[in-house]
Length: 330
Ligand code: COI
Image (cartoon, rainbow, N blue to C red; front, top):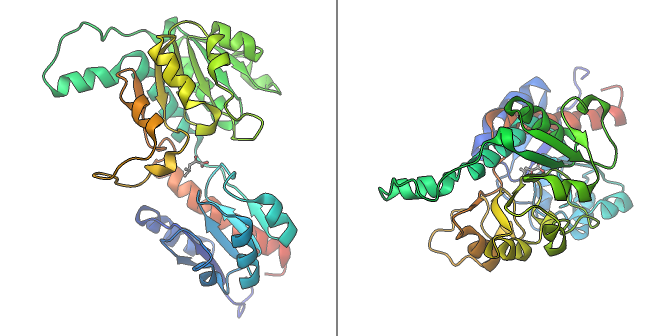
């Protein structure tokens, strides 16, 4: 930045206490001023972005009305500190001329968590800990399975799916994968197959694809019927990929042997909040959660120190790059 030039200002909405040290660190590194706002952006607080061409957001809905409002306050760039960007109305942004960008962060955060959920499900960790908590240390019903004896089906071989496959390579299991396009460098670690084969052959299925209209309820009653009896289903991607009602039926009918979900449809009724003492308005979540062979966590697979640092840094950098491209002399 040339001397005398004004310091660039970014507003970060939904700024959490645990992100603070990183906002401070990266505002210094990139020489920008970052206004931190704990609130989710809405029509009332969009004015706080006045003087900031760039805003950083997370997963709350950024709809056409809010985009228009941001544009009126002078915002020209929205960076989401997330990989997923389905919460942002991209058409509306394009129409108003606001540019939108997402970020990436340490793939180990989600891939290691996925492997952890696979192992927890195979080893019946929920039942073991629940029983242990009430001093029931009996063995009946908690016998596990070894991952090396499993065929794991990975749907989606983007950054996270790829990291999951590489992590699994140390366990000696067979890995099959489905993706529209195939990565040559992964072929030492997995065999690409069609979806039908993946459903038919996998003991464990894990999904790593983005939420789109096209893959809404990719895993549903019909696809579950194509799977092996006792199949284990893992989802650390997006809730909309799986029809929750079909999972409940699959568990009740013992077609499915175990489930671990870090994401579930309607998760905003409980995720990231302390809802003790409140009614949870998501019956399917409550039913599913009650099964001893179902583990549900509140969308925390991403949540590591490295990933949070990456999210903040990459969002700040993305804003800086936008401004630099617009005004190359800065
Ligand atoms: C993403 O980055 O897309 C995630 O799923 C994590 C987010 C909920 C913070």
